[in-house]
Image (cartoon, rainbow, N blue to C red):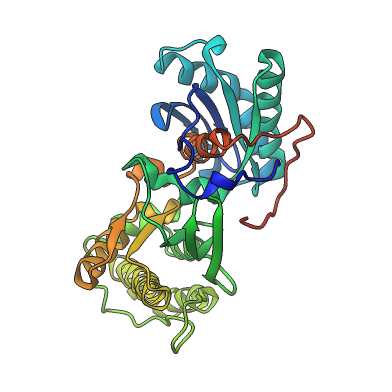
Amino acid sequence: MAAPSPGLGGSKSLKLHFELPVLAIESSCDETSAAVLLQGKILSNVVASQVAMHQKWGGVVPEAAARAHVESILPVISEALEKAMLGIGDVGAVAVTNRPGLVGALSVGVTAAKAIAFARGIPLIGIHHLEGHLLSPLSLQADLPFPHTCLIVSGGHTELVEVQKYGNYRIVGQTRDDAAGEAFDKGARVMGLGYPGGYAIQIAAETGDPRRYHLPKGLAGDTIDFSFSGLKTAVLRLVQTEGQDLSVPDAAASLQETIVSVLAERAIRSCHQLSSTALTLVGGVAANLALRNRLEEECNREGIQFLTPPIELCTDNAAMIGLAASIRLARGESDDFDLDCFANAELV
């Protein structure tokens, strides 16, 4: 990727968003998505979910996910353009998630993006999946407060990021083992609640007592790191020990409360340590209502501005990729057609 221009940090010296329509594509895991954005405004955001297919396996099967992307990618792109009331000839640039993710799944989106960009002779840019999540709160307002702290929570990631400016990110806290979303998924599985686990736990917890079962919170002390492997083990042992006497609603509520309390505690602590006056919550687990409500309450109490995107922009989607891309394209960044896919990549 080309080096960021000097104006990458803010909107005062250069325009914040690319002026022409941007077609964005996301296929990093089990959602095939395409979106069209114009100057940072979302004109369309189409998502074809594979949840129903993966439910029978209890999780995402990479090979099956890649095949499903192949079948969905062109119809999804066509629908996104149609909803935006634009044709492919109107697109001024193509953005695509190229890291991190399932390589087979990523390659479907990247191949489609390259073909469109090459045929049209327009810029191509690869976007880090987590930067898309980081900048998804741009869907709420035209610019973000800097510096601020971002809590990224999903099935594969749990990180606290110091966001100094656009393109300047520093991970200050992270899980030392498993992600919070994985704890939700594995907890739901052992309780017999199915997949995806986060939503299933949320629904079951609505009638449960969060104080019924004591579950470990992982790391102790004045830390902003996380550990959820012990929690996963504790839930499994609880289910085995209680057997038929297990109250699933109470167990779900206890699991949810444990995860939410840890995430909220560390997020607020990191704001204090970094002297941040704003906190953003992003990622798939950001759709959890208990977490959203808890952080909003805590931030109001502490005088911290709280931002989290609409629930439909928390899970994987192309609109967030387009938001990140629009800023980078406005700064003159683009990629060559040797753009590759990476299963793992640092957030830089």
